[in-house]
Image 1 (cartoon, rainbow, N blue to C red):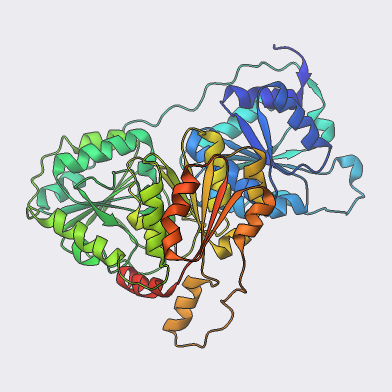
Image 2 (cartoon, rainbow, N blue to C red):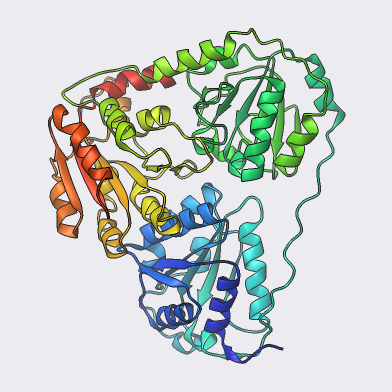
Length: 534
């Protein structure tokens, strides 16, 4: 048996052993205070955020970057309800996270204030749930951590009651054995048959390829086969953007379609179900699916699926006989053609393209970017050169606005030596502008670039396609530089093209959080969307 201490201290002890350095949230009751103190006693910092939703996104981002569970804590009722979007992001984007929320003790069963069925609300999104207390609490904590880290990763829920977490326990401080790594898969004969028949295979890589070992194997595989690869937005950097074999991104659009259609075999490498765009599959070539975990598909059914560690599966594939007959000039032609499509559209005085180009010219080469949902993500994703996995962070499964700033804060805290840039639209920043205060309070080095176009561009584009009158998509003007100044950021307003480059240079030469509010003309987005998506 171990030493006697409170359940709250056992929880903090366990998290410190897993490598948790900080957790996020908005406290609202006694349980929060107990856990904040217990965490501090074990070297774990508490980060006070302005909203619970942003706290959950920060926790999910921390989990994605660290490989250990991100942790978020809220009060009961409105606190946990406000965090739900961040929990949905963790669930759909496959990130490990522990969600903690206070609940009523049985002694307060008569109280209806703030009482909702939190377990029922969270059940569709979490992989498991438990409460912090009772018998074998340490063993149960270990199991929850194993569950959140097991593929596919996702959130777990831990309910808090004051009477439970203050109980004394002498439970061992040694964790149970972690779950073993899955066994190396055996390649079905069908895989060799499809490869033997193929002359022009193409690889489509998804979010599972961001695992370091998987990414390394993927790069070796496409080089060994000498075949083209396209990656999803979530997998950007799994194969470096400047790698000759990478021809572009899979978005289910017309940009990549003519090139993928020339393939006579499609090999999915860690392509998750949440990454398929919501429309019909465009291709008839046979498919091999390599995945670290099984999942339900409703868009396409591969001819053969191999489940297991992607690094080992890829290594086994490289031993199989295969001869590529792609034309010598295919890779270069395809890459240039897709890149040209991404450059479609123009409009002044400041276009979205100009903003991204100015950031690229001024930013350090090892910088990480985070992106909100919205039209501005297209030039940012297609122009930014990522050389490693998770150098670009995006909410793809949940595809939520209000993501970029909280994710950038989490990145700056997790890796303070790495510059981070949050690309956000005005709509996205309005959903989480209070987190500028969080960035200032904790001394985060980050640059927030606001594409201030006073409209919901993607929704407006749909409206325009349907030849509907403009309604319900435009915002009144906002000066985000003044908002940034109010929170203590260095804030720069850019209205003139000549001020764009100096503003970005100043931003990256400064310490602490910087906000660059750029008035952009959204006209270029429409042509760019048609060029890439069709």
